[in-house]
Image 1 (cartoon, rainbow, N blue to C red):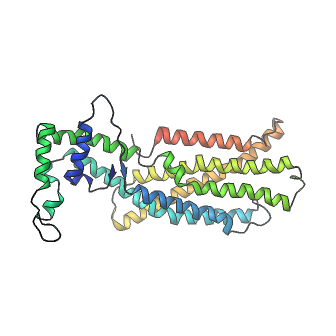
Image 2: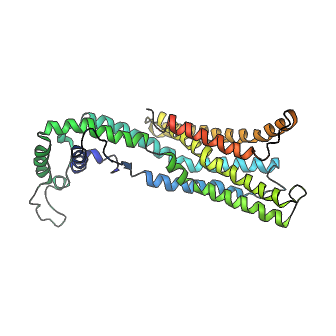
Image 3: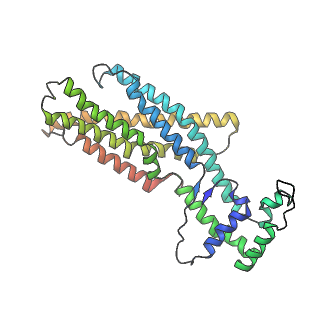
Length: 327
């Protein structure tokens, strides 16, 4: 089912969904999938957002190496700025979407057939060519409803309970799942694979003392791939889930100026949250040095694997226990 805010006002749409639920046994959950129309544009825009953000890795020239403080500051500031601009549209749209879900709940709780519309009635039973429409869809549907459900009141009761339940379940908790986020942010993986392959090519041309052995060169490339996988599969979904939860929490309409300020607040919180992960990631090298000096344990081969594992655990906890909408 493709849903937009006008769905519950169209008698044909409500009847089709209610009839589908009515035709299935009550003890077995029907195989129903409800998706908002806005999900498609949001997924595309999110993909373009990630293209812009990861492109900073190639637009900004790297001097000497990625640990150069000046390079890191320029990289982080530019990525934060591009993420700030690109996410503004997504956050604004998702806030309106969550408000529409609230309106859906209120409308279906007080659902009445008298408040629904049919296209033929809106046209005064005249087609675009000016010819009269001999059969009224509304009258046909009312007869079908009486035959299927026994009475109009029974139909309205089912819409207020079962239809409301299944629509809210999919439109709230399943609006933007982990799978959607991973698919939409796949440019992050492309950038990571490009960087991993680039390290091998670079070290072939400019070998260093540390990377003179082929095994070390390929290990460095593998570490890069594992690090990017940790961000793509773990931390990036958590950051976007954080933005969605804030959009849901601050979804109330605050007027034109107020909405701009609320969106800006959510943007700043999201960027700060992402930058916090970046700073925390830097601590893994500190931890590796501490383990080497204090515990005499070499973690160079496990550092990025542990980072990937922790990132996946964070994503699992975030999407499994928190989700995009309050339970």
